[in-house]
Image (cartoon, rainbow, N blue to C red; front, side, top):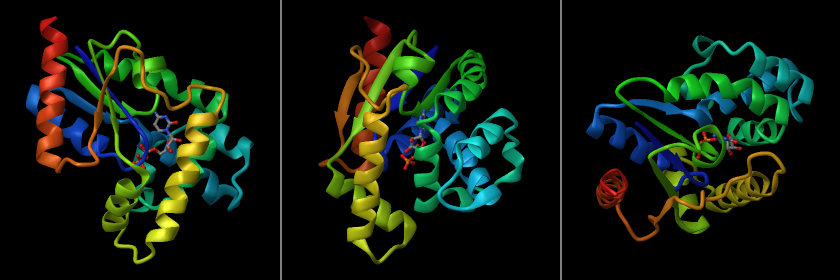
Length: 204
Ligand code: CDP
């Protein structure tokens, strides 16, 4: 059983995907963290702008133990991740790991940008979680404890743009995904709606 949760930055998909995994007793993989590890590793290797060579090398030999959550969750690493994520060799290098994870029993929830379209097109339930850029910038600003709303909003827009326009595995809702706009929802309501949407897919 696979649940694919895709969507743009700070739409709430991480929280929703984790809650779905807990609710159904499934394994959970935040695939964005893999791209963040690649971005951070390339930053460490050569600073900004990251080089494609460093990103491809990092993706080919990822060691998740070399990174802490804290250093992965900042916008500099998020931007480096989205630049690295546009390189086809980086995406290919991460594909087997994600697909093997998705096959875990009794089921898995993966969150990212291309889970329902590329990584697991066979997923039984696909959710596309979105919200307006302004709402997402407010949420990310709170999460980061940042005082500068305008620069957080600019980062989010730049990342949306890059993730949606890249040639390989762009950010787009799968044709059979349930689209959930969380702009007007608090997190409890969004989680409940996601659980209902996933269950509805299994029944039909
Ligand atoms: O948490 P947030 O939504 O800000 O980002 P993330 O899920 O940690 O992903 C960071 C970046 O990795 C994204 O902007 C994408 O460019 C890339 N990514 C991707 O291309 N494909 C995925 N399946 C997951 C993330």
